[in-house]
Length: 200
Length: 343
Picture: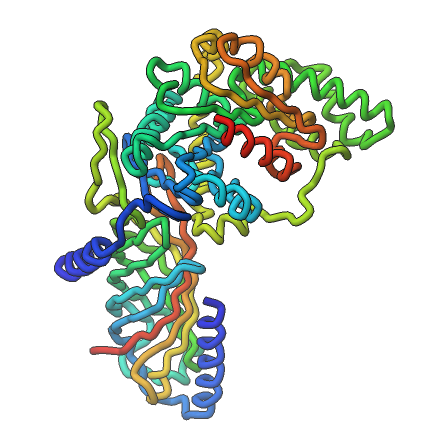
């Protein structure tokens, strides 16, 4: 996992260096995007696929980037994700997030995103029940449905501001909460590293 | 969106269906499965020599404790080569998961019965099962055994620093803290640490939840103040054991919180297992650390008095506290191995 984060950071750094000298006076309009990310639950692998829809921005259409140090943008993103935790569970979830983004005119962006959804876990192991007469039976597709809440803070780089690549890379640490989990809530730290492809 | 979700579900289910046989019935095994009971999905790992025909079923401490914390390198190397060891997470413990479930102690007892029936179904009726009960597990095991019909399901009971009588446990902890605290202070050992414990015990009794919780905290601290208690030469932290066994730390924390929040041990104060112990006649081994302040050795004396129809074997570990399996592993496990081989 650390290796992935390191590679991402290096790519991000050099990307910034390459584009930093590009001219800064292009027109900018927030766009929708398709997102694909590796989503590790710290040490356990997973991925997430989604669509983000630009819903609001304080940047006027066609505004020159050089006119503002940053713009405030709002997106709604819809995602499907899955992670695999050996001997525990696989978790398949659907999630909607409200992305509160601050896009700087040099390309970097910062984001806070609360979210909600639902999840279905699949136990990582055969599951058996024993009835009152002592009969043992296998439980098919054992697992649970949970409500899902999430919160994340992320940083990324928007290549399209310089007109070179139609997308963004991002690093997104966060927490997801499954509830009710054994009468309380289960908290799972996650780290996403991904790419958003701009689409109109 | 719904279709994609459905397709991914089908893919996961298909992959799950391709797994190997659930139970290995010969050789050195390492099986993992779940027991589903009353809304709780409890993980079970069975690891070790199944050809021995003997299973050592760990009834862990807590409630909300960690079954796989017992699976350190010493156990993997020396115990699993002798017997199969069953690491069962109780309800609301470790990786046990679910939306809901009964928190009453009777549900734990029912789970234990179901697990034994499942183990016999999985590995054969002829397999011998020995309960290895530690701390809170030392309440659960006798509570299970005195229920009519349950004793016949197992072949031996090993009780280690167990809390079979919670009220007696608290009174013994209170007395032991005072006695040892004063002795240590007289010998000018860790005076500052002991002073706060002794002063509290002198003005408070052992009754009530908050006093019991305070005594438990003092008891755990007291053990660390005794120089005679052996510390493991190479410390394997719970964290490293949890990570190597894929234990979700977050699930363990949630379950631990649930166990405390719902005061699971509360009803245990009203259960007097001792009065029913005369019914038991199965081979029994009682193991205690001399410096166990959490569940003092007076509890072992109480068991010996009440187990009138069996001759329990017992051993006090002179350099141990509440967990002699960590303090004096060689001596501890040799005693366990001898007992199981004999019975």
